[in-house]
Length: 502
Image (tube, rainbow, N blue to C red; front, side, top):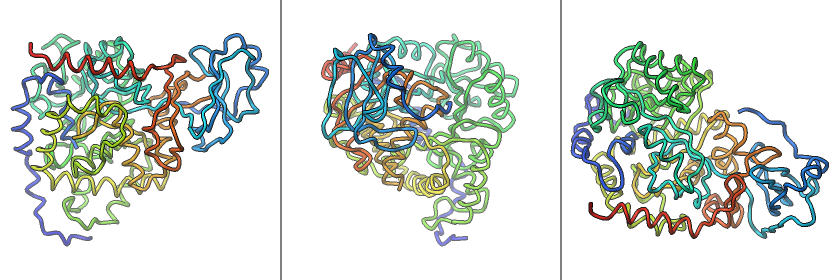
């Protein structure tokens, strides 16, 4: 094994006092965020037939056609470009999509031709921590669907009913053991019954029975998935996963990092979570623990290739999928690594997030060694999983890391994936076709007959230069054209209202 680095990993066997102190100091809600929603700042489908609708099919519904889009088209299922593409919208669905000659439309339809531009499905961000006052930033950023990964049920309801909101899939409050780091950051943490169900966060569970009860309560409340956190014991974790499956709910696990829990707090590592049936691993968490348990030093710059291969092999034997949030990890390791240049809405968002980002930069400076080590280790595993076709989904964890504005942060995640040697086409697929499969939704993330009319048009060709995704020309959600200028103006108003003294 490559253990040339002599730094003592045993110092990472106790909770991280800096992060615990910072968490305690952060208990008072800020104007922009209540503290618990951003604990993750430091934690660092169905198959559809290929092809297009026939001309006859579209002709039968010709009276319903509202808009026809012509230009270069990204086929997200096959990760291919159709140079002479067409997308026919009929109300809130797609009537036809594919090569130009495959579709037909009535003579009086509104036709928009895009030169040197690319038409894609609306993007999907699989890991966000949204708030009603900035949820409006997603649509004008080209993100038409989000998966919210820890919020009170009351906030989830506000997100889903907000004006100009994307499609929202949500976990509601996560499940964790009593007294954990995340519980210490919240005034409404507790077991079921200690707080109103719509305000509790996180839900503390101390046994398999309590986990089962909590999953049932969240299912009854209408969540889309169950979020499981770092300090659940193995039996309780497994019970929660299996109970979620009984309720036809997916599970997402955040198993902790070197910078938050070190190596002795969590009990479940990345391989164990995968083996019991967890749907997705967020942040590739639990990797440092698995690596350490196999004799590796996660702080060492020279990684043990054989251990990484062993972990990858075990993961690939399961059905688990990864949401690596690589940009988040990269920016905590190096806050200047992914500049906000040309990000949609960055000028609008930045003045209201400066203090928030400055705090994250401070945390990054104080814990740079474990954060950098986590990024190095996770990038190495991601490359192995990607090369062997594990399902990878795109999630930003916005606004957890420094300099990641809500909405636009997904474009940074796509860039980070490409910098980690994922091809631009596959990075786009991670935010479209793969993301729809991770969500278990069959009508988004792909443009074909019967799909939701969620569409993004960008300048250039993002399959050649992934940063072209941020050069937004037009966005449709459910067939409605988004007025991006008005959307950003409304976000600015909402953020300014949050800045006003009470």
